Amino acid sequence: MAVAPAASQQEAGSSRADAASTTAQTTDSDAETRAAALRERFRRLRYGNLAEFELGGKQLRISYPDLLTDSDDYRAFESLGTGDVSTWNSGRAVKLLTHASLSFDGIVVPYGNASPDYPGVYSLWPRRTADGWSLVFNGEADIWGSQRDATADAVEVPLEHSTADRPTEKLTIEFLEVEPGAVLRIAWGDHQFLAAFEATP
Image 1: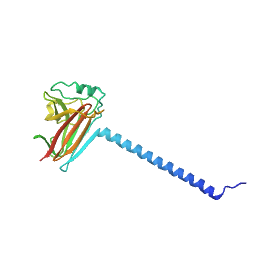
Image 2: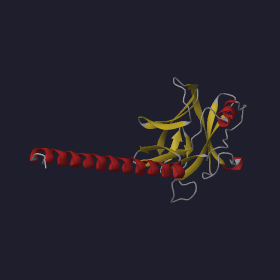
Image 3: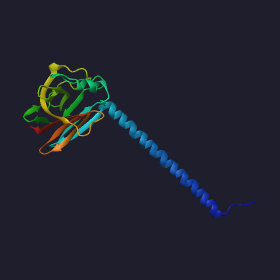
Image 4: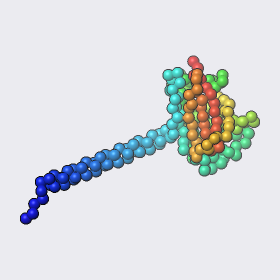
């Protein structure tokens, strides 16, 4: 009976071991990818999209929903009349949590509006004005995007509006670092809104 040379047997065994090792690594990689996707899914269910920033050692966070440009929400946003405030039926309200009071050119959004020992919490609502746009800070933060109570409006600050260089497919909110403070940037479709602010005692 013919017997394979020892070297050939070793090579075959080595190939099988390499294949098993590669398969195990691929399986581990796939499992890690699935676990990361699951963590991201739970994070989005809890927070939605997040914009985070640290200003003067104080944390700021805005959570906001996936609001597509190709949607009834965006079409309603584009058709707002003077004095109207945006609403959206397909997501939670945009929520700000801030560990510092924020000054928008002297207009202060105070820390601790819900409780003296708790960060400031607000829902955010763009409003079309006679001169352009403004941003309304409402004291009810954990609500659906169609449930704003105007009696809970706390502060309103002007927004600088322009046409975006690159239109977005969905609502995008971010903080831009600009000394000595920061700029809040909101982009949606062809619209870009900017509001500069600083932390204040």
